[in-house]
Length: 349
Image (cartoon, rainbow, N blue to C red; front, side):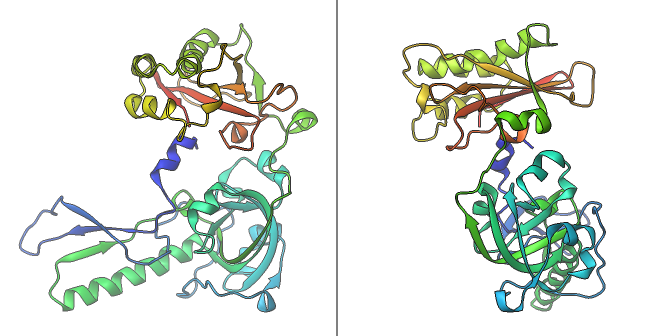
């Protein structure tokens, strides 16, 4: 998933509420948003990796203590979730993208999202879990997306019954947030997390030989000219702080958010490319493409254009798409471009 999709704010725990009037056949199309369960993610889940059983209605716990937590490995939890479901467990793993996996290397070796454990909890809240990318010790309640769905439905039914008794015509509908929005499988409802701030958070350099999923774009690479013409000028417009030129370019290549993106791109408070603003010369842009093509039509492609924030990024460039982001700690900043079904998408952030 691209960084731009973060704007959807799946860490917000909310319920979609629709108004149904008893004297109408059709559903009223006016929608309201109202909190149903603070901190709870609601859903009907996708197919799980190792299907946890849902045998009884159990609410998630947020008060697991170290003293009662069963030591476990994430590999065991993912492979045999039913051994741990409804227990407090203590695990160590690498936290990234609001998931936890056994190790940093696991992220690169197992790109499938259903080979991870989804994280939920109030401390830290979802927004911090989403941004975190570190090794950590975690204590939490072993749970599952399937249980979240079942519990949410029960809570919603109870709330609707209470509303009906009071003569209300408002019906609450459970809605999923977080990573259970996309999949089923195991969940760790975190009550305690100790982050290793000094742990490595990405692979690069020599690790590329084993873990790289990107390759440098060559002049002979399919769509190389189109990619360079889409991404390259963006860096130059930002360097010149040419908002009008950038907005026109983004509109030309089909960016639906051209105006807001152009505003952010020249705003030093919002821009991960602020190091470029007013630079004396144009930066060298290094382009990368995934080793495996995007599935779909023959003309589909994905690409990444990165510029270095330090004197030399040799041996430090991203080796996988999951590293082609704009985190402050990275020595580079990147722009993504993808063409799907003849539609070009450019992601600045």
